[in-house]
Length: 79
Image (tube, rainbow, N blue to C red; front, side):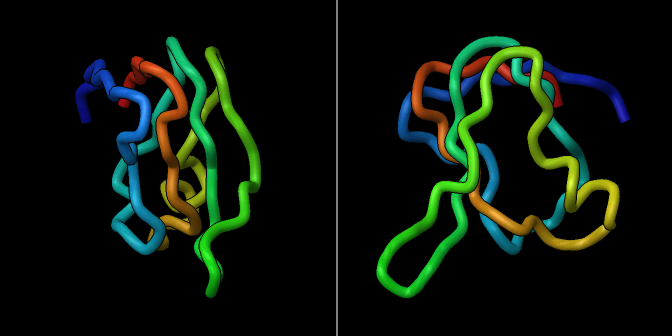
């Protein structure tokens, strides 16, 4: 799989809970909220910034995504 750089605006979702986890992402720029959906909204699990990886759990487990990732700021990621 080739690496590709992608940008997201604040408020955009990078991946959704339950979606296929065919890749992981290296944060280059920005801040992301990792969130778990609950009955009355969501619970924030973590905030992730530059030089951190997101989406690795489902990627390595070969299972669907376990949480949502939402860009809190402008983000640039390498997939």
